[in-house]
Length: 216
Image (cartoon, rainbow, N blue to C red; front, side, top):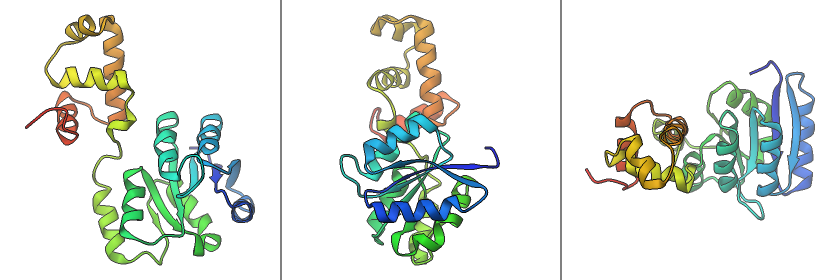
């Protein structure tokens, strides 16, 4: 990461969006490179700019912030997501985590906290608005020890390859079954392991068990 933190800011409320952009752009180490008014536009901006941080309103038209977060993680794995929300509930915070968020910023304190939040998330640290109760922070941190991926992160073809891998088929077997070359299967396997952040077949099997692809 360069010294300049690049940010895409997505919120369907123009006044809030412009206010946060102004607050961020006054900082010498932060540059808002893209703005979005809905989830689809946020994904497009993230695809175009591959920013360090994307700030996503949890509720946006067309595509919610949580849905957009999953797509952004696929097109720009290095981008870190900061969820912006007016909601302070267990369900909203945990849903943000499952979507891969690094932080949860409440709108009521966003103006004063957004700079700290962006710097923390860009540096690989979680950020919570101070209004979030301690029990939620703890549960969020504990849950964060779980991998930040889901089956939805894989394409349909990658899911097919994964299913066969965890069932014990070799690359050659899989190639024959799916009418692919062994080299292509090897590429799929490497891509799957990279997306799921595992280095071994055992890691793939554990993931498959978690999502019911194979039984214990």
